[in-house]
Image 1: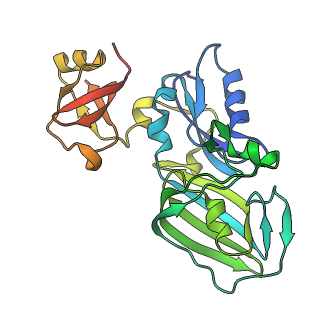
Image 2 (image 1 turned 30 degrees about the vertical axis):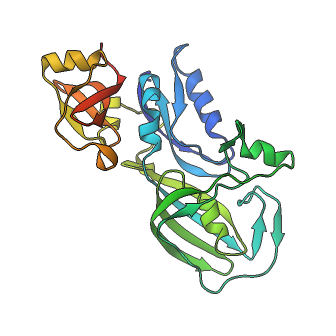
Length: 269
């Protein structure tokens, strides 16, 4: 296995995202950095992007990609964790119709989540009885569809922005919790393409970012972190990152600013 790029890993249930990273690390030469781009809960399955070598340096761009999930909700019961691993209380209250909201709205991270408050993970505080919810954050649900419903179980598919908690969307049905959860896509990456052996080269993995080809002098400047001229948009409507290439080689990732592209991650010097 090559030691640089993005590995599309089909995570099974019962293991953490950290477990997957540790397993991949054991199969690589010592010293190779390994990370991931978006945690999946132990009970959840599906696509996990494992980052190898220099791909760990672009984690934030991959984590910002929208996600697609398929979930099965159990109605008529609640869970303190929002999923089947928590303390389940049967209420028998099953809603006749479900509200499937789309659009942009505020969502509060659940008490059992990896969000940090005061430098500590929320789930760590919740496990010792000091449950605290995180601050509301803006999320966007692009699509929310009901796939089927059988008795007190219902399957949904959700396309949403990074940072959206499907467990919270399910809990908003009323008395409901997430019984199954599978991540089927992260941006352009699909679960059906997951392969524990194939590493996607970084240049290919970052193809979702717009590119800007540089000539020789500008490529040398960018490779040393020096800004290069830019006549494109800047500000809130500009892309979060732009691939700087030279003869199809990835030189850097830059942030667009007024009149220039500022390299923030450099790959060639």
